Image (cartoon, rainbow, N blue to C red):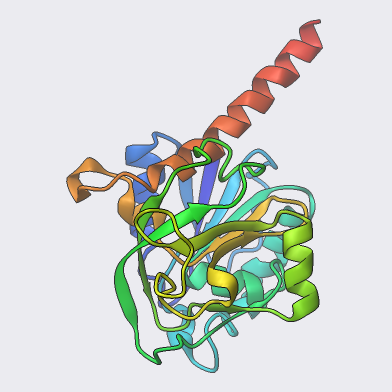
Length: 244
């Protein structure tokens, strides 16, 4: 599996993400500059990552300018073919602005920048990003954002539940989804979602900052393991079907 890490002016988590997928996970990866338009070296087995940061300085609205970068048309086409796309923090904002994911990320309810560890309760195992996570798991993963309050209209929220598109909810250490555990006022404590095709993923917490024992937290590593294991499983199944 190959990863592409998109770099915008103002990205500041691109090197962290690249380090984790290459040095920690042992995968092939390359940076993708935002002005590139040719990503034909990536197949639908691969994953394009939009890392955190402050693309274009977060002027106008988070992700609003990045949405019009030359790379976006190619990524939208890639996702339309079934390629996997992961957006973390600012990357999640960009995916919503580009309509690859429904809803929007608004200013935190506190009107302050929130930077701390939070707890996440996985809501589904039916995606490549979460397939290896235990149903009873509680993940401790840090957040760092000023505009992370997920919002959507009532019909969209209903659709997210009906189609099993909610990836994570903010919870307390014991796994209880409560108002007090919600760090930014997100609707229904939503911390991450996927698209209807379940190949585009967005989340506000940073799994790349919780993937190494040197950081005293490896809870985020399971997300990358899930992504890579799903591709390996599909490759084996395809190989077996050809030789049957």
